[in-house]
Image 1 (tube, rainbow, N blue to C red):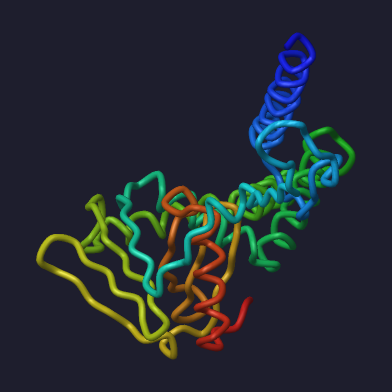
Image 2 (image 1 turned 180 degrees about the vertical axis):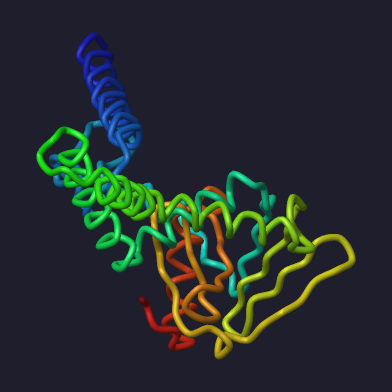
Length: 232
């Protein structure tokens, strides 16, 4: 009688340890290959036999995976700060402005030498200083001029609903809106503020990165590449 109770207790204790191990492995997650129990051929002296146990666990990135939609819908407001951010990013890509900035710095240094007495003509020094400051501030001047024009845009300061699909991009604000196929764009840039979609060298539509998830941004790139919109 005592030997039978001891055997049953050992069997229940072994099964309980096996369940605890399975629970701990499930809690840790990860992708586990089908592995049998430690001793699949061990026989217990109870009413049943131990059989191999196979455990399958999907990794977290597969459990959380959702297919990307065909059309992406984004919402954001065309604020003045957002316009300024994209204008500065646009003009930062202009090589002529970079050369103009360097030339402006050079003119300022030479003009300062004139006022320091290194040469006699103060007029030349003043002209060099004026030219230099114009070259250095060219980017900011262009941004200010572009912002003035942007204020005349019918959607300026309004909430936009933008739909990006493989065929076109649609923009709506209230009851007004428009759509354009991808062959109307000559190229695109993906900069720190977001996507700049160019109609020509200086006219562009932008999609801010703050309005997109990382998956949406990848989907936009896929749509642009499929539509053969060149990256500038």
